View (cartoon, one colour):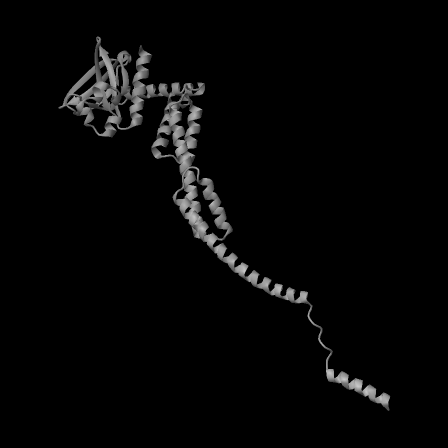
Length: 310
């Protein structure tokens, strides 16, 4: 009986405990838990600080964009490029980046323009300005650099003068001769057929203008200018071999004449002075042609005819 009672006592004692006693927490495990909690709090704080710092940095970049854009000058181009690159990296407002890029592009363009204008000025003071090929390259470069209209016009005019004054190629010489011969044939034909070549004669003494015709005698020795003043026919006869012709504005006595100056600009531009000599006494006619083309054909016809008859 005593043995049985002992077993019941042990069972009761076990049931009285209910659960096995919990093991005490190791000191290291408590430290790790605290550390994990502190680390979580630290990460949240760091994330918050990083966001604030990034926002401050974005504002700083934006301010740099503004200040650099306002003070763009030589030597600051790279700083502006870096500021734009950083602004893109940190996602700055697109419109602000676009405006900064526009300012940078305009600054670079202005730099190129100023550099090219200085180069053009130096070019005009160098022997290279007499070279057609080099001048053509400079015109192209100045056009690309968008130099001022005044500078570009000066270059283009220089190039055109060089082209006009250059030596003609063999085929161009041939074409020029044929053109001059044709002008002479046309002039002779007009002066000898259908009553003569019509012209307008300017009287340099009183500024009056009269309709007249130019004719040639059959042997082509004399040129006749037939006019009509107050219904009285007047004929002026001059030797063909003594003739020469120039633009009216290039004849000093004519260009300084008050009546010539009073003409419309188009009339002055289309004027022709035909010089002659009778018994070693010089004289001249001043004709007003309707167009520059007829003006040029008249000059060519008179000059070639005079050379042919000399």
